[in-house]
Length: 129
Figure 1 (cartoon, rainbow, N blue to C red):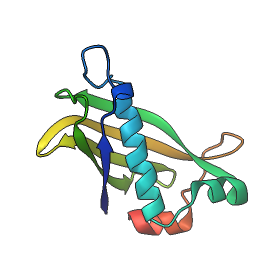
Figure 2: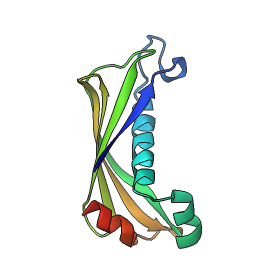
Figure 3: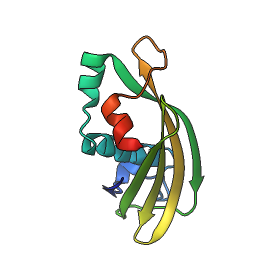
Figure 4: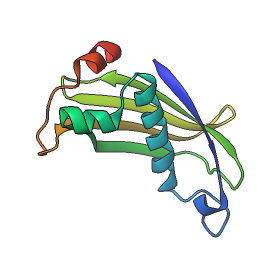
């Protein structure tokens, strides 16, 4: 399963040259992952409050390929796979039309509120395998 999340570049997203500040791509892809989690029928607040588990990003490998600029209309493409019983890996791209501007592989780990790794929820394991 994959998902697309639209993003518009606002003035606050850019540096003095009108180019998207590099750290904002991480915010864009976070939105893409959040939308995908919701699409899978998971509510992260309920998971935290009822099950005591959260997702923690443990690794990001990113390539900045071309700049996005003020008022660009972008799309975050997010696909995912389970890497283990506790790891969830996302492949993400930020595109302007057919041009890939940014690409990342993000690893998230399912953790208890006490900070210990735990298995992905059963419903999620079924969805990502």
